[in-house]
Image 1: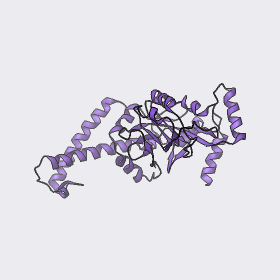
Image 2: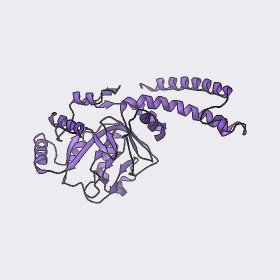
Image 3: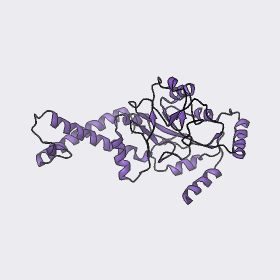
Image 4: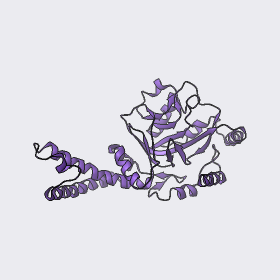
Length: 304
């Protein structure tokens, strides 16, 4: 509780962004994400390269979980969503938006500040206008359904056309019949015909938020599949991908042994690791050869 309150004070003391109460300065963003090895956006948000994000398309949730679990990052997954296209993974850089119940003395100052700087008075669109290609909007609307509708089909179209991605909302959407045909995965808690309520206000953009049991930082890699969504701290991107390469090669070798050896091996001879010294040696040589091939291909595709 003390640490959470300290972070609240830090945010309150930071310079105000044009359209929300709290944000992180570039220096604060870099401090709280200092373990990230990647380049940054102008505001300090980590920018994992597109070529690296592309590699996540071949990963499973188990491969993400394994590395995070070993490093005791246990609060990076959120589930219990409805998903528009569960067969399509959601992968990108987290762009976080925090909503709170409206309080007049805070909201009035917030809106006056926005108006003075030429912004519209509909806060959710102010956030949407800041999205960039490769972003994934991650919005906490307190789990509300009625009045907690982050977008309908028109603004959902804008999100997809701007980012190339879907989005995650701890809240609702509207116009589902119009959103469903869009070729993107949307993770949401419910559907309601009401527009977003004026009894909600944006209090933070690109600040730490929570989605379910997960803590989300701006720039985290969002990895969504049929089970739910991981929010991956960027310092674990390379370990996850490197570990996945080994696991994929192990599975490749294991399945080849089961498929093309006419019942020669029992399952325990091969899986989870080869039993005999001869098979162990064969697997280690295969792993070394295939890892070299994989790394050579990755080097051709761009920076990691």
